[in-house]
Each structure stands twice: as C-alpha cells, then as structure tokens.
Length: 365
Image (cartoon, rainbow, N blue to C red; front, side, top):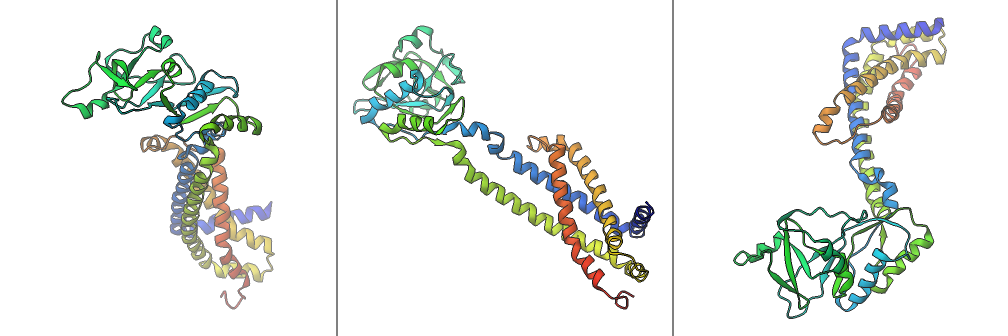
C-alpha cells in the first residue's frame, strides 16, 4: 500500500510540476481520441455492409436478362418467381420491370415497372400527377391500359401525351389512364397474359439464407437465358474490405502522428526529472518501481483524456447528426477504441523508457 501511495503521489507531483506540458498532452490526447472515435464511427456506419450483412447474405442481384427471341423463357421465369413453388420463400423483390419487344411498326417505346397490388414483397410508390391508378378489374384481367411516366413528354413537347390517349406497344393499343411523376407501370397480369415483354430483374431477397442446394436450384431457374444471380454479400465484401483497409490505414496514420508528438511531450516531462530518476536508481529502486514511476503519469493523463474525450464525443451527438452521422458508437466500442489507443501510446513511449533505463548514473547527472 505504501508503494502504491508513493507512486501515486509522486506521479501527481510529476504532473503538477509540468502543468503546461501536462495540459498540452491532455488536450492533444482528448482531440486524438475523439478523432479516433469519429473515424471508427465512420468505419462502422458509413457503409451499410455491416448493418445489413445478414440481409445481404439472402439477397441476390440479377443482371439484366432476356432477349427478344427468348421472351417466352423470360416470361416463364417471371411466372415462376411470382406464382411458382420451386424456389424457397421470397420475402421481397425490387426493380423488376419490363420492356416491350419492339417491332418496326411500334409508335413509342415504354419501359414500365410491374405493378403489384397488395403484394408485401413489392412496394410501388406511385405519384400520379394526372389521371388515376389501375382498378381492381384492370389488375385482375390484365386490361391493355398503361400509366406512363411524365418524363416521356419531355420528348413530345409539341404533342404531349394526355390521359385517354392510346399508344401502340407491339402493335397492341394501350390506353393511357394516368401519368406518374417518375415511372411507367403495367399490371402483373398484363405481363403474365402477354409474352411479348422482355423482363428484367434487380434484387431478389429470400426469407432465409439459401443453402447450397437451394442456391443451385435458384440459379438453374435463370440458366435457360444465361442469367447469373450473384449474392449481394459476395459483391460487397471486396468493396467493404477496401473500405476497412482505407480507414484502418487512416486511423493508424493519425494515431501514429498524434501519439508520436505526445510521446515527445512525455519525453520532455521525463527528461526534466532525470536527476530524480537517477537518485531512485542509486538508492537501489527495483525495475517494477521504476516502470511504475515512469508510466503512472502517462496512464493518469490518458485516463483523464479518455474520459474527457468520451464526454465530448457523446455530448456532440446532435452536431454529428446535423452533419450526417447517423449513429454514435456504443460505450463498449468506445472502450475498445480507447484501449487500442492506450496500448499504442504505451508502445510509442517505450523507447524513452529504455533509453532512461540504460543511461548510467554519470550520464543522467
């Protein structure tokens, strides 16, 4: 107990005797730790890969598929995804849209999303600016009606489309019943009744992660038209790895530069008391005591800086949200970051201790 009290009191005196240097170290360490917290936050939350890893493992991206001469095959795949029972349960899909198979006599080219009413797997955010949406009868029967995108009128400024006009798609007249602000739509039943549409897909998400056998079955569904579903997880893992490497390199560089400067300040504080250390050694102080006397002021300042940095980091959460940082680190993650910083700090101050220990009594006078 006496040894601990002596070490603690001596360390406090050491800090107070070098109050200016101690304050500089405290402020520098606080800024450094806050910076590491922010970089760790950016690493964890600026990329959705970590948050959505489980979802990405059961989500597949499908390249644009289908060619005009294979419209019957793409139709069969579409029908299988919507109504079939070969595949495991699909929880959601997005980006499925269709293009008409154009021939020479087609007046206009309309790329439309497929409209699914009350289908929890697919959500359509219509923004009708004129006209109406589909009626229940039109959805069930697959009537030749279409909602067109307002953007189509960009190319027809002199003769814009209006509700009630007709357009030809594959030589079949479709009545325009509505104009949407962003997208064109046809009904699911219309696609299933007419095989003259080439179907494209974007993302398909299953309720559970596919095992190897289910994944083979899934890929075989697209095999007839050369489609190759790719796991979103495998697509993003390389991108995330580069993301992690970049941030770790940045964190390492900032930590090394900042802590090296701080180590020099600690070195100055130690050098100012070299004669005192020499007296301890002449009196026969053992190595553990010398280590304690050297590192305790460093640990006290680093603990104080860590606590101050944590408070600053947490109380600036509104500012972080204002500049676009969605979440802040949990206390446990902050603690892990701090422990890493503390270890690095001890390592960068180690050379000064080794030099002090090796110096003879004459050299330290």
